[in-house]
Picture 1 (cartoon, protein in one colour):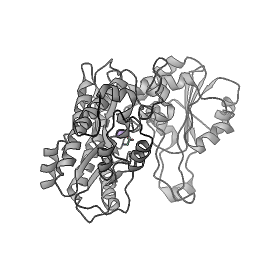
Picture 2 (cartoon, rainbow, N blue to C red):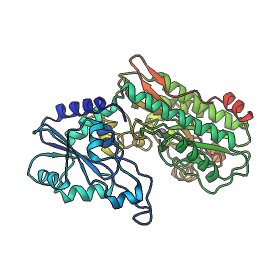
Picture 3 (cartoon, rainbow, N blue to C red):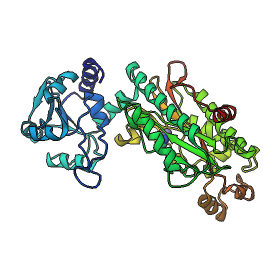
Length: 452
Ligand code: GLY
Ligand code: MN
């Protein structure tokens, strides 16, 4: 936990913005995998963590703004619970660590919630939370003022948060080094992914999201499988840890199983790396992330034209959406307590504004962040090139964007796979700063690392 002053300051800022009523932030509950007592690893709700720092299931936090009270409530562990779990810190002691003055029983709080006052709550993403809210009569729409206030606060990372994010990125970098160290022909993707999870857990936290480690990197979120990796293939590894404070890291590297990229793999890799570097160099306060995305797309289109896969004017090709045959997703996303930070609060609030709405064009519609950047934002830059046979066949059959795409050449790439390069950045007053330690990224650095 941070010091209690950090949480008090966050709550005071929230109260000042919301102004009246009750704010309710239910913490997460334990969740059974296949029966009630066989549990998934517990993950606290990120908003509950942000405002209380308390990493324990089955609690609920309330700010009664009208009566100027902050209340933590839940059931104390009974002696019978302790027989199974060992001693538990009392709820009043947890509250004290977070600077919360009051604890109450569920019954007292439930009567306040049913008292006809304005209650601000967030959109639930777990069924248990939805059921709980509904039992308290909170069945209306989530509070847009609360969503907006929390997004505004959580979007700007403070110095203590950046320290934690850098720790998470450092653990994530160790995961990638492990992947590059152990990957040899004959191992399964699952085996390698398991070794990465061990690094994340040994780092004090866990995975920030399920490991994406695959020789079929053309599929954007293809998780590890029983596939056995072979020389000549590339491994796309998109993985990250969250540290013991639950801040996330999210990195992607693509590397050759044999230790050496083929000349064609190298050419495609360098197109992605160039787009990555140009996008990273463009980061600064005031720029629309949508424009950084389009800049990266244009760089990809220029590279694909050089390779003979695209034709025509790259800017026009990108405006038409033709490049999305090869780059079907967004350039990046916010990152913090969630790897896609605050995504459950709604992309329209996190990544877009009243003035800037999300596009519906294929490719751009998957861009999670479009808005103007501010100092203190932490985000990923993750361009890629993905050769998806089904998509190529579908577009080719309807001759989609044939002014910009050389389908005869593209046909030769249906077995190529996919390449992505991803890093995490802090937007600073003057530009941006790469977060975390150096990790092999250029073709030469990757070759050198794989030779060790
Ligand atoms: N690293 C997974 C993602 O950004 O979607
Ligand atoms: Mn990512």
